[in-house]
Image 1: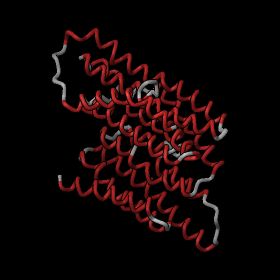
Image 2: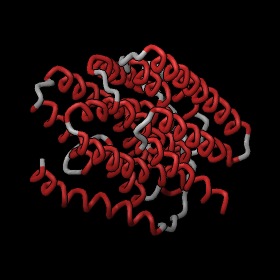
Image 3: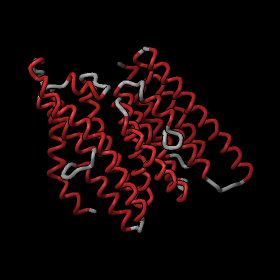
Image 4: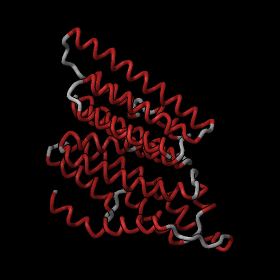
Length: 324
């Protein structure tokens, strides 16, 4: 227990070091502390899959850190001001397309809470550093690539893979929002992380990892309601708060004349909603056929928080538009 508290504190501390540092060496040091803190967290399950995932993660992060270190030496010696290499390194660190293959592979073998950390907190440092050294044309290319790569998840059956491709898609939305409004970017990632945690809590409670598990294990109506409301919010359908994040992004992109990228992201998100609809049908409709074979399950208290969050989001969404 104390070790977990220490590791989580070190993880937060390393993130603060990187995002508050005014030198590249300080950023690099924060990234290394972050890596050394997250590896034991990934390996806390003491099984073969977590050990394999932690080794792969360490190799990728160490390789990108080594490239970053030598790039810093090169730029110091040549006095170069070109920062495209730093953007590419950060893309590699957070698993953005076209460096997403390691991210999908590792996500496939992590438990749910480690997956949540990898999809949310571990992306903070790379995204903020990209914001420091942003190259417009490279970012536009990566946004389009993230949108296209995320369509691969249409034929996936494992929920963790679906979430990982969804995370890649949302990285495109976040980076596009960084181009126009950095304050709203913080709101976007906060809302996205909250919705993601709600879903992961529900799925982790019953050890659901595959699409057919939704049909085999889940049977009681209140759980289906919670799962349904969170998936609808993740799909960005009004009046849930997930819709607010996409609306803010679309509005700001249109105000800044990014029409093509706005249309592209809307089309890609609409296509990807197919997978969430498929998951909802599995859990919300098909399970009614098996209700008689299961006993009623006691509802944990955190279920009520999840439901409360979605209800409040529906009530408060109109007021958020006053500030847009």
